Image 1: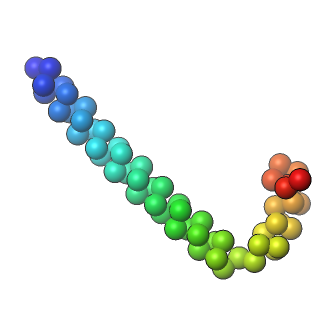
Image 2: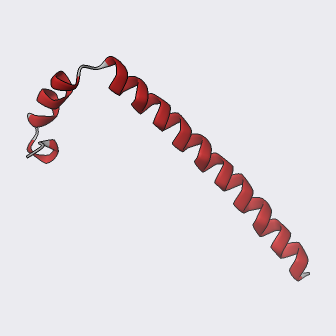
Amino acid sequence: MDTEKLMVALNEFIHVGGALVLVIAVVSVLTGFMREYTPQDKLQKTLSKHEKWAHY
């Protein structure tokens, strides 16, 4: 009975971990594309318009 619960927990951990790795990979690729194709000075000007994101 305890082994069955452990296997269910391990299976759930593997599924959630795999989904998280996939999400992190997609976000990293999208961020990389954004940094590659967006001029950094334009991005900095856009972000500095908002005090929350301004770089001091």
